[in-house]
Length: 194
Image (cartoon, rainbow, N blue to C red; front, side, top):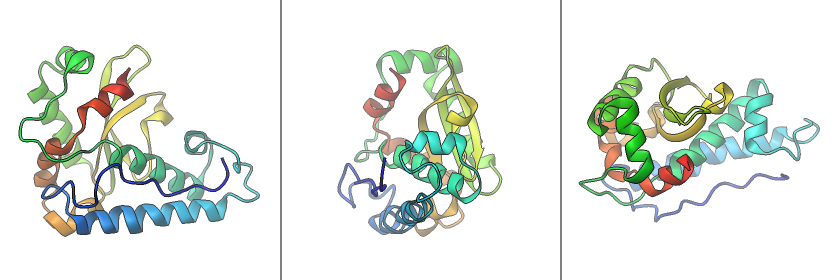
């Protein structure tokens, strides 16, 4: 793998406003994620993981290396799933069918997902993942954990670390989570589900 690079955002730095502000992205992507990338690059020499994929490091490493690799993996999936806000934004195709099958309706899924994000104590992530049979599950992962560590395939995530929303929403985590649905690029999530 060699030296890790900070992922480029697949949209303009102000494209997600007003849901996520340019200022939040400058800090969250440009400072927090960049910091994890720099930290991990500093830990790789002599670690035995110099040529490992990010997923492999997140599955096998421990301590600070695991935390930084997990956070890079999580943030890459997080920042890669957004596009400009749309008022009526919902999945289609096989993913939409699976959501209705496994949660009853898209609205019921959104409610369960937001509740998982709101009730996660402290810092972490809420995930929609698929198990080996394609069944959709919602999990809460603390700190830098990722569903791949449970044998799941991550599809969609909301970051509930305060740095993800504090500049825009202060302590109003539920309001932030409710707004994120407007910027999900369901085509990306559908591709991950394939």
